Length: 542
Image (cartoon, rainbow, N blue to C red; front, side):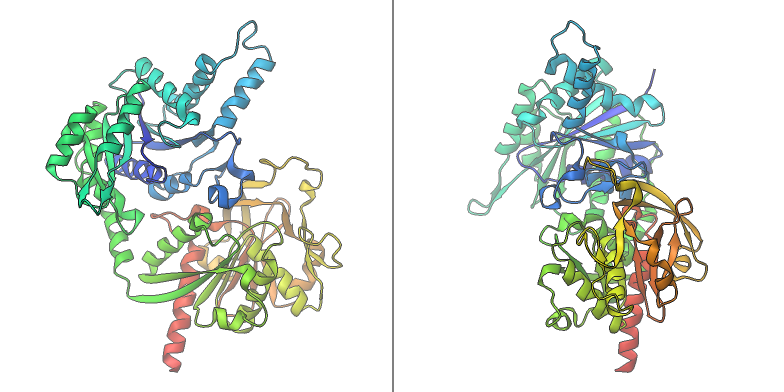
């Protein structure tokens, strides 16, 4: 029988309190004490996964090595813990119901009325303990999406209630993340919303063991005592989560508040000394005390919602620490960029990343941006659609293919330099059918990419249907924009680089998905370095 312990993290009062960051921070501290930890996210929406959801609805869709399209919180888990997650780490209501209905159709429940209890809750419990049953982990942290009291969250809370009874109180604890709002008119913090949130959880049969309280102001001893008294928790289990400037400060705040120590005590596990967080502290010092500064433009179509490019922004933070450089990221809506304003909009930038995306909205703005960067020797980094736009721009403006395009945008283009992959041509369903997950890539020796990675064989994560059209490969190979990265199995072009340019790299994959605090992505590190070198050249020239 597995000896894995389970920590369940719920949220109350309001959404967006940061359950994912609290979960990742606790996991980091437990990991730093020598425990084997992973995190899983249970999302209450009925979509099978977020793969078909608009970024404005859900933020970034995070892709794992095994090709699962998941919640963006899995990105936090990987960045904090430096681990690889999988399909098993993210479960949705859609997936739960799909499994139960499939079971019913095959006769598994023959003669029975299929109900939320026990059939749906049994499947939730099975999924909750799946990773724990592998024996690979000492502690599994399970984040429950949504807010306690939501109709869609009820089966998950009920499953937690049942699991606590089945596994025993020493093997499970519940951490409830809540809000202590500050009323400026009254000049005081209010605990009533937290009391009501805990009351709702109690009505569902679950008593939280630890309360993590998001707050803009420090919690006094009296407030902590009051919360403990009214919510049936120990005073040392009332944890203050003060607002901080960077998510990477949260583990240190939680360590100061002894969240990890209280958690281990309630799970009847030894503390194993203090957390070994020296590398993390060093990262924070370099992040907070830069020696130089650059301004990077991010051109995309979802810039109104920062979470749409969450992994890109975090990869910049990792690269900033390595380079001891402050990075100011300026967001540009690609729809607003035209030939007559591109110079005024992008003037003064030290580098530009053209972001991934789908569909033709804003595509010409991305192409115009890349033309300006190419002609003015400004460092460029294109990811997925950003790389494809670089190919289209070069074909149109250098190779003379005036109406070159991607068949995603123009099915009748005479020069389809980007085309639907052969394996995608008979695909009808939208969900989970793209080229997803990690694929190998061989790099040309001496290329910028090979120098950045320090090797010629890599593996990166993908999420796309369209690809560089190899029918035009000879024209590009003979010109300045050269393919330098290739999939060894099907010879697909994965990377293009412009020769005789300070730094111009387009990649078909998503490097941002593999950047972590412990292992910043080399392409982001070198891109930021190229921007720094541009600043140095301009300073010397002045």
